[in-house]
Figure 1 (cartoon, rainbow, N blue to C red):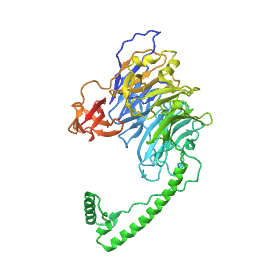
Figure 2 (figure 1 turned 45 degrees about the vertical axis):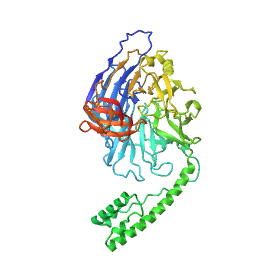
Figure 3 (figure 1 turned 90 degrees about the vertical axis):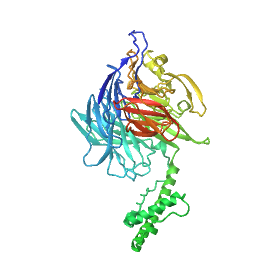
Length: 576
């Protein structure tokens, strides 16, 4: 279902030329991306895409009749994303009320795919397709980079080139194109290496439309230092298919004996399959195969140890958080969060700093490893002039209190977000703008291990800037209620505070204190997600007959529910 919702003004403010600028808000949605011109934002949570036109009619358009995902939005409100349940998504663009499938090459079996980036004019989409014909646990690249060029009803799909091996000589898991530059000659993304824990920033470039794409990897020199060459990484030997040597009765007898041994506390030697094979010929064949497998496994372990010795020897102690990537709309700047580990304390602590590259200056790297940037990370977009948006903490769930700051180009000091916007809008925006919008909170902070009262602090949350830095938006979470709201400021305009609550205040749960292990709904609920207080997802699934199972561990949780009408609710529950 596509639902159009006109935001209703909660505060009537007459237009006065000398007034400061006010904020537009949309409750219970978290806007995760902004268009280049700052007019549109999009949200994608739990299969619902919300498109927000903040400038003209202040309307929300909601897509919720299927599982939708939206990752980027163009200047005319076209969203690049996917449709389908997790693991079966197919790439699409969403424009107005229309869903257009992006073509996928027919010579490969695909598991899922998605559009991840879109050009400001909406005519180029970059994204990924994941193969369904390879073993994702093996030494193979299964997520591949693609670009779609759109000319009216004609859409062409082109594979982007990529390195076959990662820095260590192994097959990377995949490549994720994320951003398309305004001139459509540069695509920015990431390589996820074999381990899934590292990789590099990837810059795909072409000299002009129609010319071939090439690629450059950035960041490998920060992660790896000089040293001996990596030996070839071995392929793990295939396990023995014991069903080729054992009958069903023999397998059942072995399983029964193994279960009894496990039930007795794993005491003594475990049962051996060969002891349950009654035919001597089959038994000899099984033992021969087992001997060969054990020999191959021993060689594999030796080769793995040799590889890992070089691997750890060449690590610098730094890593890149490639899931925090940020870029400018003109494609000049790209960055992510740099991570290192402080081993001075009893418990190792991850320290973060912002990192970015100027691609027009010979890929010059700026590593902001200074005290004023400690424990911050890249967030939102970089403006075309090079103003950086950074956040603290660098990593957070949507329910965590978070603040964003701006490092203006040419300066070496983070500014409060409202200070930056005040300079950009000639004083129309200031701290009071956010206070008046209800974004000044007081709460107890436990991040240092000791409770600290934080009073009257303005939380702009996870913030985004348009290409020129004049428009801004983001979402902020109330630390007391864990409810979040998206906000928007359009530079040069003075509009009232608006709010669109995706769900009203009617009761959703029968009870918020759960004592019998069952969460029961009084509203028509479709699906739900439960988060513990660290932000980890402990449940995600459909609501069956109005109930879901509560977490088994007692404590406080956040319950995020998608109702049958597509609206979203957030409730705190206590499990006893």
